[in-house]
Image (cartoon, rainbow over the protein chains, first blue to last red):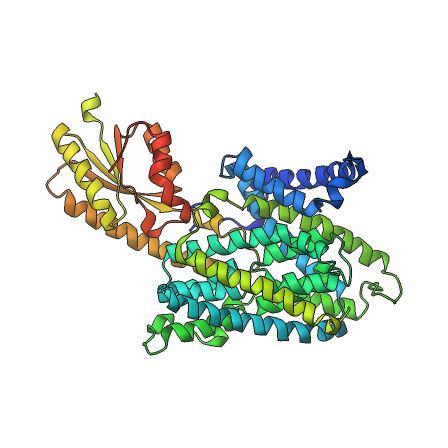
Length: 381
Length: 149
């Protein structure tokens, strides 16, 4: 699709430097000056009011700055000089997720993962069934319904783009599905920390809730770090990301299931037919393997003590990795903010928006109710 | 000099382009001017799906290839629509330009490549991103010689 001359990563790097400098510079200013200033500023006779009441931290400030760059400063389009650097934000976040593997041991994954599989699996199936039913009820085109089913049930944009070719979705179908889920995701990313704090949720409950209830991966990460910016075992991000990874892994399976539903009773063209094995190879998110590799290395003690509650404190290496992660996520999320285009989101509408909102809100609220109901059974890691 | 400057028309191969194409042809024939049909192959999809970051490279590229196929099919439909409408007009030329629809058309007019741009209210919506819905309105703000049909 890109008209730019295809070059390798190293070839692209010089062109990415201005954008990269803007991303890094923004996060440096936020973390070294803005956040400390907000923590000390006296508003309404209260020191730190800006942080205590607005719950703004470097994560949300970074995303807001990214959004301001694109939609206000640059008038809706990233200038060419910064575009390549902003594209690297995805690499930052994926690298951060891989490093996040250092928060877990295999035992912790097994303990938390079983519950995550149960909850995530339940919500994925429930959301797919709900979208298929609503699609029929509202007379939505079958291919549009297929895209929305996976977009609302797994992880937003990834699932929408993975499903579209398999169900012959038109470009406009995918465009509206993406606009709907991103719009909803951005809203939940900003309101979830407030709700979490207002309800007095702890990190475990909050991570389980947003990991299940928010539609899009990037926004799960942001919502978790906005609730608690610390990166350590048992924090919101460590719980939410395990939930999220379980969901991301299910993409090839969900694409397969929705494809089978779409073509039921019809002969799928020969060239388009793909087995589950092919889908697994094509659609499996490779960074998950890096994450699992990191978990394995952590489990065998490659980085020293992890610092699990009640155990020995985290090693210097682990502490350094966690410090890097905060910077890496912060920089990546400024870039993510830079991809939020209000002009596109404003145009979301029609039946996809209706279906997306009904399913999204149901999932978001139901996930909170379920997490509150099972809070005594949630496993600490 | 002005008499020879072409009339440009946005054509997307859908029924929504029939009226603008007819109007552009009428103007071109009346003024004995060249007519340029334009289809913009939207390259904004890369950025549009860019705020996602967890899909496999294969899923993302597979999708972009899939969308590109759709856009190219639409471009061919537009070419056929333009050719059928202008078969009696000798100075008619169709072009496919990759880029953002709004920016591409604005730049083309800013370079003075045509005197008037004609576009339908639903130009390029047949295969566009959501923001293309307001393309005609956005063009009206930036292209003084635009005629929306």
